[in-house]
Image (cartoon, rainbow, N blue to C red):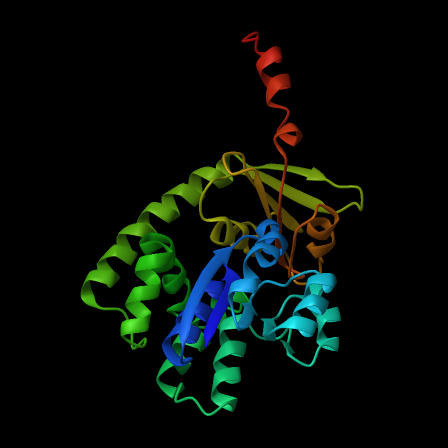
Amino acid sequence: MLTLHISHNDLDGVGCGILIKKFLPGTITTAYLGYDDLDAYIAENIHRYDRVIITDISPSYGQAEMLAGEKDAAIIDHHASSQELKRFPFTVHDISKCATLLTWEWLKNQGFAVEPYKEFALCVNDVDMWRLKRDDSLKMSVLFNLMGIERFEKRFREEPYDGFNETESLLITLEEERRNAYIKKAVRNMTTLKDKRGLTAAVVFAESYASELGNRIISDGEADYAVLINAQQKKVSLRSSPDVDIRVIAEANGGGGHKNAAGFSMKEEAFNLEGILKKTGII
């Protein structure tokens, strides 16, 4: 059986990919995508495959209807924005768990011997759901960012998680030192303002460590929510205190996520590069 597995291109999405490739039989092709790329990719590629599995990212309702009529399909997601897809019998949806943990449970319910990967799934769940009750979950996120998708996937497909080896621990320590210095500098350059709702927003330009930086700002009580602008990638990440729902901001701009952790992409003109260059006299 030819299987197309489509997953989000973050730690949680790659965690799903590791489990799917490790345990499902047959030939599996995995594509790690961003939110904006999903529907077009499905339309262009599903005709080549017998089965389609989508994890940690959700297609439009119309695309899900098409899959229901044409393919052996499964959708495993935990984002509130995809709740309507629960109408399809092949959808697994639970906003209280990350997609990696849901995928682990889905495989276990089918009889696959996934127990050695339980700690890996729980570790990813702790950081993706931003519970941070484990000492190792942020370190797992650091390792993912250091290794990149291909190396990270290969490492954990070959060997289940049972702590970090000596080399990984050293790399994580060095990266944590670099991260802490970066966050300290970013916080010094932070701007706070009142939004339309009267909430305090902290705005920071940052190309790295969005989750960790946002968590630092919120945990320090600096603002109700943080707006983390990555000008290079034209992306905005949002993090908030428990009682502030910033998902609505992301969804209004074509993005998505969770109540306290969300994001969206922005078009070139939104940053008004031409206006900046004119104001500085460059053009």
